[in-house]
Length: 370
Ligand code: F6R
Image 1 (tube, helix red, strand yellow):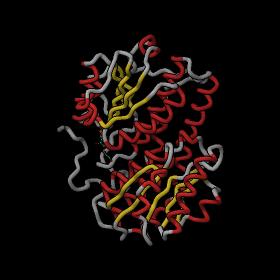
Image 2: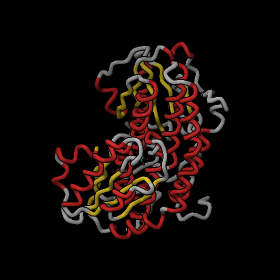
Image 3: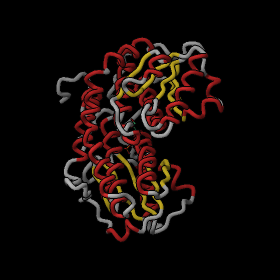
């Protein structure tokens, strides 16, 4: 069943490229027209949407945070991301023009299901992004966009995450199309870039494993890790930190790199491992330079720096102790590649410590209680 791999987690990480590819399959044509066949909300309702709220938990909520950056940029509609268990108890503002997007791998997460019911009771439309056909969340939604990652067995979510992010991009581009927020050519360009992403993920799996294994071996005794990123690198940092907590039982904290000087830098001491998600060095110069100055600051305090950065980034090479390289890709799509070495890194750390990577202690694959 594990197809020759040591663990389901191993197998599922290696299915990241296929998960993205299958989620894109058959959803747009040559001209760049997107059709989301499982969506049963009519265009008129989509056109009138003036706010989107993503509800989800854990990894799915980090996929939602990536969605926020992409959808706000493309569609110019405000997107909030809220943990499903917080959402229902704070009297959220919901109207018939609010689109609630429930993201869930299992489709059975009780917190997300209860939040979805609350949203529908208030008259909002709910669209589910889900990996499990016929589960409770898609059944109770007005529309469903299935991720086609295939069944995920390992408790820690990996291929489902990249599929959720992919589905979120498709939803964003679909909304941009329906609302006329982007030109057809712009949409097509992004779709072309998306089609290239599975090969880019594969490149990571083919070429970056040695660096990841070495970093894990170097850092296996570390007591804590910090993960930092900006823009879409911020949710990737959070997700990388969560993976390491879940399966390697290492204390980690993920945060926005800009926060460093507002407090967390006090934690940085000689030898402290700090993982930076560095934005592409082309195009977004401002953010690249800002993340780099964060790297310099922690380096000056003796931190051990692991960076995820674009191939050929000389500045990063100068400061980082280890670099996991990414191929060039549009910034908004970079989470699809950047998360992959972090998934492997967490798995390596857990294996080196002798833990069962598929069944971490205290965790269940599907959390069906509130
Ligand atoms: C992380 C993980 C959890 C789930 C969360 C939501 O690796 O597995 O954080 O992402 O429990 O689960 P779903 O997506 O099934 O609603």
